Image (cartoon, rainbow, N blue to C red; front, top):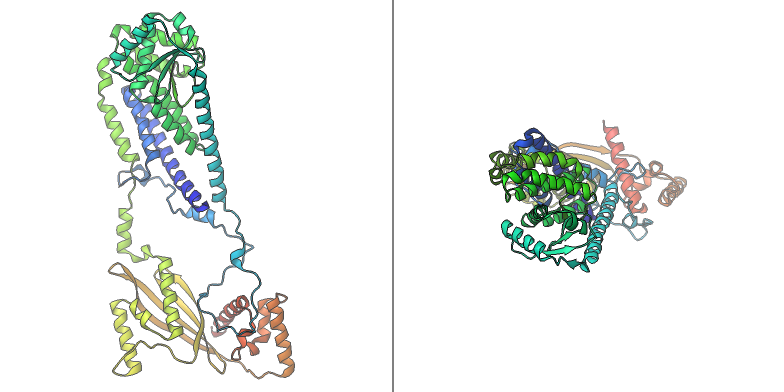
Length: 549
């Protein structure tokens, strides 16, 4: 559940950031074009923002604006670092393969106390952030739905307008707007200005003051404006944007964008209403808007509502548009179409990865799959431990297979087989270091004397027919480390006590250096617990490397 939540937040953050960039571009375009961008097209620009927020996937394009803006990708390194913060209190994990135990444990082996898998990891910053985001989203959605449901309940008991003249005027306005769906005309004091409310069953709410102070002509303008909201499906758009805001509640850019979108929505409705009246009536329409702002100062601010009054700060811009409006300008705008296509192509596409992909094909080092190389390396090293070379052969390139066959022929005569390695010294453990497409494997081997050996093997990976293969391999170092293994009874007792104390945790692993004569005897390592054995082997390899050099 937590993983799904963090993945969702990662995608939301990426989408929100890209949407913020689009908001900036829309505002810049509107500022540069000013009155050259007609109301209808100015509002349609915000549809691009809605699409950007809705699209779970977008095609890649070299024209995308996000080629120059770095965004949060799905598998962001930032997110990875947040999810897996380094802790100075946690000892680095032992890098030896867990599948290659030193030797089979005897019944006397001391078992480790506790299991790391049972330790609860603390929540990462991303997990905490995802919880906060989820709570915020649920709270916003709950508040929004509750407010709309409560308002719907308030107006449910209100009565319809009974004045036949007003009802006839309203029906004529619907015909002018070519809107044929049923819209209830309600007289109510639950609103302070004419308001359209309802998504599925829209209602035009008219306050008593409007019926008292507005004449028939002014009422017609009000009706045309509010019916424009129905024709343009603005209530549905407002609901959709509010739902998106609940998901991106943390982004102030989107809240500001919604405020500007609602202002452009009102202006676009003015333009549609003006297209249904005579040009000489524009001034009267503007005066009606001013009168509404004077009489009704507090419009309803709900996702399911649209009010004619709008924002006083936008009044000047609306009046300029109204008084200079020309009917044909609503129908078409080459500039508006060009801006929509330009911003749509730049902002509704994702950054192109084609060039990066081509570069990766040309340079295999740029397309290294560390996890896959790690798995193949483990198979390769385990093959030497089991002395079975077939798994190695199957992961080789054609060139490497030829080399392997020739080496086996030299070992076995004219015929060759898959046997590799020797019976002594045998591999007791190994570790690997990956550097791009190159790997260094360090083996710790043991003989029956007993003597420790260190063998270093290098691998070079490449891709053959799209498959990751071992292209070359070579043993680059073999070294022996021996010590006298004769032990007196007194020394034996002293060293056994050291081993017991280290297993209990009373002494550090480094103290085992004084007990190595016992540990180097055949089966001596079985006196160590599994976890202590791993740490001791690791320290032994490091010490051997230092001694050899």
